[in-house]
Length: 169
Image (cartoon, rainbow, N blue to C red; front, side, top):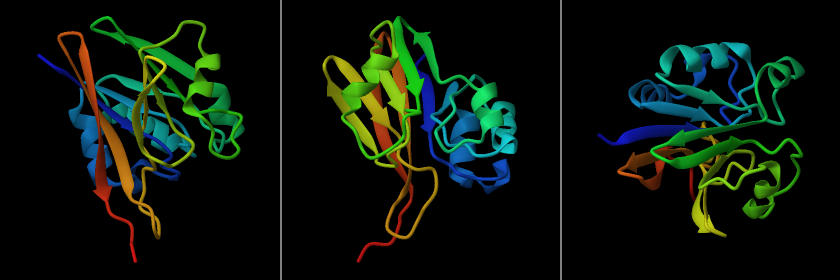
């Protein structure tokens, strides 16, 4: 039976109920759910944990001190022998080459799930699959997106899913 993994990031909400309903459903319906940081409030952490069968959460650079102190900077899980890492680069700042994230892990993962840039990415580099689910809300010109990963018989696939389209002119 395949393992379904929902990946969201950069929700920037005050309450779990404010997170897009489709994201909340994806979290609830997946085997594992990952939030890659910039959660903003404890209520969102609590709701994510309550709804997820197997929650993985890392803090982001926009999270308040109390969340940064209560949530890890990185997480690594193993699913069917595949090492899957989650991170939200604490160093913040402008866009960066995703390969820089490798420095934050002592062992090279097979997959790195990360937030911060609000730009969806699904690309293999240096033998690692880098997946950024994008931002978890629609803004003026930017879509609300997430990533859906499937692990089946030791193989992993990732897809970026558009939840709500931003405006485009």
